[in-house]
Image (cartoon, rainbow, N blue to C red):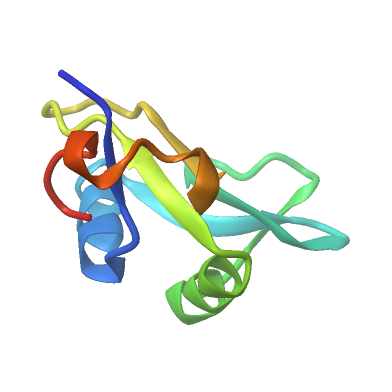
Amino acid sequence: MARQFTKDHAVITAWAVERGATPARVRGAPGVLRLAFGPLPPNWQAISWEEFFAAFDAAGLVFMYESSPGSRICKLIHAELAEPEGNAGAGR
């Protein structure tokens, strides 16, 4: 499955919830966001989706992911690193 990119909060939330992921950030680094699959590492802090998306939007991030069922392949990247819109796939 090809990489897909999106800024759509509903798409990101649905993808994460379907795979059991929760929003988090690195302690002491409010802008360093993560999706946690399972227990949080000691240096991560659970946050609300509202906090997650406020930081996501403020940083100009894009969610890169694979939509295959069960796939956990994802990354939060800066928008300028995303593929041009014609190659980005659905959900942008």
